[in-house]
Length: 170
Image (cartoon, rainbow, N blue to C red; front, side, top):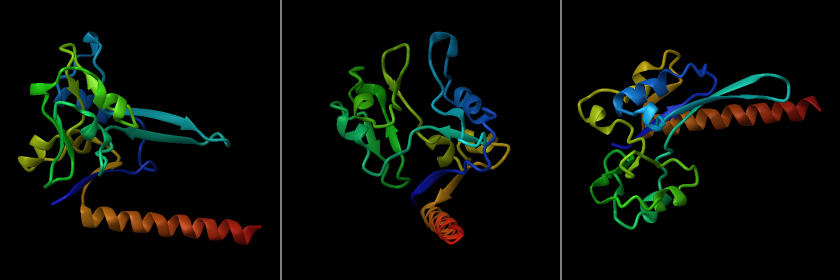
């Protein structure tokens, strides 16, 4: 069954717990120059309001990184829908990173590509991805395709209502 990592920016506080869990789960070595696969940041709006974000691999449906890798190291998992990697044949050419519109693929000290795999091994063992498990506000959740589509529909309805309200206030 296809699954999605869902991020609710209204619940995020940019605490960084997701990034720390990612570093721990993936043995990311910060002193060696490695970066976590998930990053948090804050943007300030025009009126001074703050917006918090947590981003990682988007696991694109038609992932350009998969097509960009000349060695076949990246694949789309048919069951989960996540973009997975196997660095066995990685030559460190950075083609995947150049193809990714989000600049997600990272490279370890060994020169091989690494990226978020939605903690697929944890999921296979019946556990949530590390970032989802530790998120104290529930901003990150793992959803089934059905639940994801329902959330998207609700968000679209909410945005349409807000647009109509703005039009009526003119």
